[in-house]
Amino acid sequence: MSFALEVPREYGYVLATATASLFVNTFHRVLTSRARAAAGIAYPTAYASQEQADRDPKAFKFNSAQRAHANFTENHASFVTSLLIAGLRYPGPAAYAGAAWVAGRLAYAYAYTSYGPKARGLGFGVAQLGKAALVAMALSACYGMIQTA
Image (cartoon, rainbow, N blue to C red; front, top):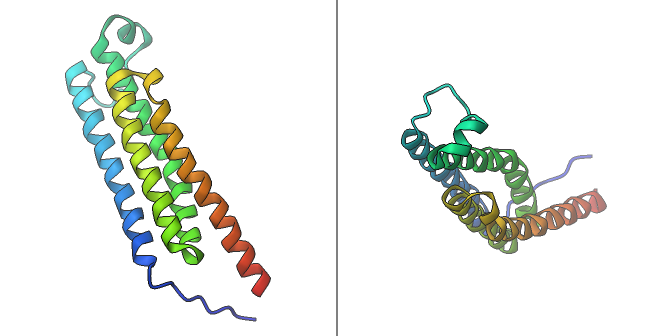
């Protein structure tokens, strides 16, 4: 049995939110590149050593920027997946929850890079609230599709 999938008219907002998340990656790249240059950490070195980070605040800042960027990449795929699925049934709420995730990730990137790991909490919390809403909507969308199959 086949299933016809109709994309809601408001799905463009979902796609715009997904696209906005790509700019968060660009923001991370800029923060990390600036911190790398300031610390004098040459490529391909991924992180400053613990000894470097302990004695040089610029090396510590680079490590913070690099870790914040890594955390973003660890979470981006599951965010986009849940956003795109949730948006099939709940395009408006999914776009809003996605926008909260994007805003939270921007705050997370800035705070973590500028002030270290202890400052990342607010951005993390906002992003996680948005993502939790998306996962709930995605589950509901999946359940609804299964029920009509």
